[in-house]
Structure formats: structure tokens, C-alpha cells
Length: 284
Image (tube, rainbow, N blue to C red; front, side, top):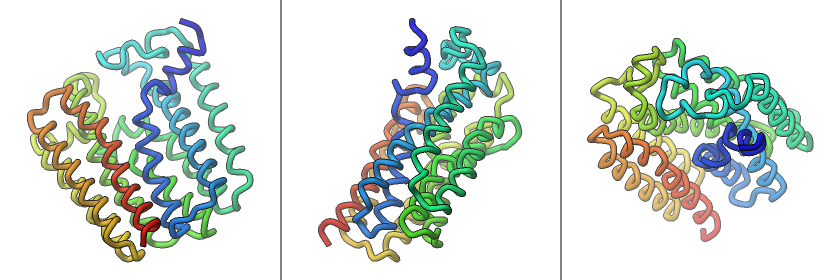
């Protein structure tokens, strides 16, 4: 396997679910901030930036977890863990992608650039939270949702209260979907000493996931309503709620592959929320 193929796998371009989980909240923020008519240039910048930063985050994550991943069946064959690329290569890839992402936002205002620095720090430090933080998925939610305040900053040159509430909703959503993901590796994580929400919640893991879904959707519903969104938006939230209920049927048995399927299915939950916002602005 050539180096480019290994780098492709390092940054998970073969598994785009992570990109989509970052992209939906970012697009929702851009549509809300611009009242349904965001500048296409800004949309392209944020879409490409999301791809680049998620990819950089994967490289950093694999570097941080290189000594742990070899003990987890699902991650043992990752390019860095298996020794097919070196640690310095992962860091070089992450740095290159981060620089490319920063270059993308150069045309944007100063506030967006300032927030981008915080975004890089949060994304780079997330993997180390698993060493000591009982629910690192909450920190992941901040990292995965930081496109929300950045999106509002790029459009409005300010970050209103609704942006921070949407970030809180994203934290609850991330705890929900990443707990499903963590349920896949729970046995391995216990053995090697990694802290995850699936371990912290214990036998209440399924209930915690559903409560977090409920909190996320409730906050998003209130935020959208206060922003003047109505029927199409409420319909999108209803579809997202139905998706969350479907996830309950997948995770209640705590079977590995079913939990992983629920995690991946969160793409449709995010898509439903974005569709509700976009359609409401388009048809109202």
C-alpha cells in the first residue's frame, strides 16, 4: 500500500461519517445566521474547512492513541498503530491540514480567525481528555460543534446567545452518538484504562444516550422557534426525534455492531435537522 493510501486512511477519508457530524451543525449555524441565504463563498470555505480540520483531528487522535489503539481490535490495523507510517508523519499531516484550513479563512473577519485558534486548541487537546475526563464525549461535542460560533461570527461578526445554546445542544448530541460509538469498544477501553461515557454511565448507558438526544433536540427546537422557524423546522426536528427513537431499538441490546450502526446513522439525524432549517427558510 503506497503512502498516499495510508495517509488517506489516517485521516479517515474512507469513513466520512465524522465529516458529516461536524458539517451538519456548521451548516445549520450558517443558515440561521444568514436567515436562510448564506454567502456561497462562506459555505464553501466552511465545508472545506470542516473536511480539513476533521482530517487533521484524526491524525492527531491516532498520534495520541498510538500506544492504546494496538490493544483494541477495531483500531489495531490503523496505519500509525500498525507501524506502516511513523509518528512524525502523522504530526506533519495534521500540521499541513491545519495550515491549509487557516489559509481558507483568511478572507473572513478577525473574530472568525480568533475563534479558529480556539478551535484548533480544542481539537488538538481532545484525545488527551480520555486519559482523565469521565465523559470526554462532552469535550468532543465542543470540538465538533465549534463551527457553530465560527459560522455566526463569519456571517454576523458576532456570536449571539443562540449560537452558544446550539453549541450546548451539540454537546448533548455528541455525548449521545459517541456513547453509542464507545459502547462498541467498552471491553477494550476498560482493559487498557481509557475513560469513556459508556464506562462512566455503566448500566444506565442506554438511558443516558436517550436523555442526551432529548436534551439536544429540545434545545434546538427552542432555538429555532425563537429564531422564527415554524412548520418545516418542527417537521425536521420530529424526523430527527424519530431517528433517535430508532437508535434506541439498535442500542438497547448493547450489541457491538448494532451500536456502531446507530452511531453511523446519526448522519440522518443531522441531515433531518438541517433540512428542516433550510426548507423553512426556503418556503416561508
